[in-house]
Image 1 (cartoon, rainbow, N blue to C red):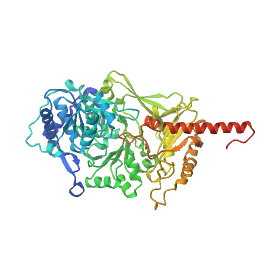
Image 2: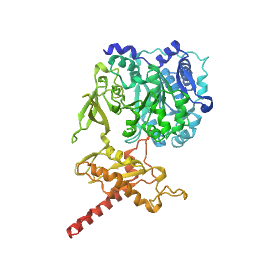
Image 3: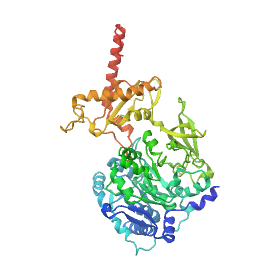
Image 4: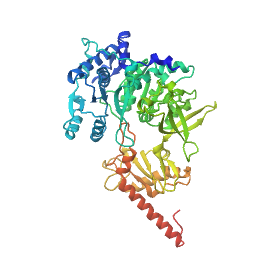
Length: 581
């Protein structure tokens, strides 16, 4: 059956050129100018996109050596120039490295080293970042890209020919993106033309499995607002989806960065008659705190999220009003399409289509956790993005853990639980999921986020990051009360009371609900220092290893305190004194 899908596996730049010929005036991108709130959004048609890519290709040849295949990096504002340069690089036989501007200087230089890239294209808006890189790496060549309007003015630009076939170029590297750095420094991931072509199979897959529906079906013929910037796979893939399928994508203004203001997003939705939203879940949770804004989400045809888990209570409410789905996948493996469920309560579960090669293996020592593996199926090679990246493997461990959930119709779907590197093993070999504990504590209204650790220790430790309005003073670890008129914040002397409140209301419940014999003592719980916010990736997820590094001394101090308490309890018991209850 794979043979039937081959006509759907076409090259991105050829598809764009074909669409420009067939439907030149059809709009595929809506973007914001500086005056978007008064003048509305601007548009890009297929003809304009194809022309801009041609102009970018000629510009690259003019500024660089024609015919020279090498890696070039682009660091610019979140606008369509990423799309123009990607197409231009593919047409001219170059590899486009896409570093995220929020990665540290050290991280960006590491990416340049790993990809052997010594040329950075940047825009006026990012010139200061480029100067920081040059200050450390003087030999780095910097080229400034023309404005977006320069590339959009392409009526007189001749067609830039691209004659390669699918078989000739499917294994060629098209662009280089990178991991977010959750578990260490950013790692470059090389995506081929074949990897991009997977988005061209979705319509075929939808037809192949009809009448069962895929979660992606809602995007066809939609007007989709994506809040994901083009440096993320979820952002750059918006171009792939709309190029191969039928959709219009709406992008954020270039000056909008996370955390986004809910009211600004509402304005964009209403100004562009958006029918669907694709976003990290934190924005959905922010919407849920504003009844008027939340009603806007409820009125959309669909809402899709990726990158983290959505609060269960928020999802349960929203799924009663609109089609709510989670998108799972990674930079390395691409997306893993799933069948929809007729049950709205299944919004956070998966039933992966067979073409993904999904296989679940039990996790040792757990009754209901399974790790997802993706197995190579030769008949499904057109649909399996991971094997375009890991070409020498026959199976890919995703390190994602799931639990089965059986529904009323006796169907089994899978709910994402955590990553395998979120499992913490204590010194006495007991294992627990850090995510379970963190999610439970994070429901406390004062808590912004939580980090749980304790690998190799006898008990876990907890570090709690508060919402800004409850932040602590660095010097005395008390509440920051710089605003003397703010009576909502506790005073510095109530720091212990605040931690006691969170412990008694949230952590005691975690202990009571039980993780076997594991118990979190009060002595190994602390509040994060506002001067040391949790290190986060560009997707706002916590970099776990970095938290432990930043708080190493305080973590050790907590365990010393815990040991003293244990010794005291032991002495009291030995002397016939009742221990601490």
